[in-house]
Amino acid sequence: MIRPFNFSAGPARLPEEVLRQAAADMLDWNGSGMSVMEMSHRGKEFISIYENAQSDFRELMSIPEDFKILFMQGGGLAENAIVPLNLSAGGSVDFVVTGSWSEKSHQEARRYCDVRIAASSRGGGFTSLPEPTSWEIGSDTRYVHVCTNETIHGVEFHQLPDLKALGSKAPLVIDFSSHVASRPVDWSKVGLAFAGAQKNLGPAGLTLVVVREELLGHALPACPSAFDYQIVADHHSMYNTPPTYAIYIAGLVFKWLKAQTEDQTTGIAAMEKRNVKKAQLLYDAIDNSQLYRNGVDRNCRSRMNVPFQLLDESRNDAFLAGAKVRSLLQLKGHKSVGGMRASIYNAMPVAGVQALVDYMREFEKENA
Image (cartoon, rainbow, N blue to C red; front, side, top):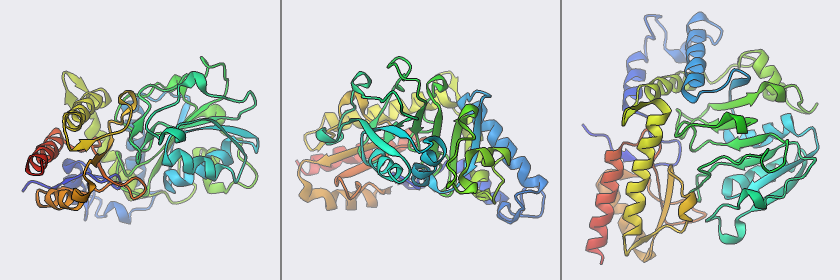
């Protein structure tokens, strides 16, 4: 049986191999007599799952040893509060606003510190990225926050900004929730990165934080203990009960990612090549069409989240109905922007994108 192709923006499609492994382990993990969901988070069985997941993620993403990897809860939305609680010291921070998620981030941070907008693409409808050389970064800023892939508007930084080259000593904070593990990261430019797992790494409930050790230990007095990065790091993400099953699934995804190959590359390099191919296939279909359009500047189009509109929006419902019949699911765009959106994360095979492209061409021909 071929599974439907699920283009949901998150929670999103998981690799079939991972789901089959989880199903096989459901009642009895490795002869322990327990499901992972039944294990004590302090027992030797789960500790081995946790340690392997952390080690695999560090290896997979080439994370330097001076970064701590934290397994937390609350999703990316909670990190919009947790980051300023840990890094702002109640001072000023700068945000680059490039879409809905960075909008949410800077609004939430206002509760805890003085927020400034260093740059924004709101005036252009969030279809482009402001050039880093135009950013107005304060000399006193505690950090600069960037959402490196905007899930709703389909805008992506294909290169991380280099704050040092811009004359700033502030750490760069990146929300890379919707393209984590889809490409390599230049950690020399990053102070802290966070990601909800439910798009590219696993099920909802787990948030990964990768933070330089030098940024630990500066939490505001009002910061809850469970959200203090120093406390979480000191307790190896076990200060409170972590999302154990989500960590287990993420660990399986990490192993799946490490095993991927594409054009004589492996792991994240292989995923990046595959993701480039998938995105190009879909964008070519849109750009060569008389029915569909994508308004994002070509130099910052997301490889993960591809929004597109039908020029005749009266046909939207018919398009979605035909897609569902063909087992192409969750293509309706976010309510704030309308249209369609295809999220083509790591677990979406090229065959799924090809099936969508074939349907788009068929629908256009029938509705010419």
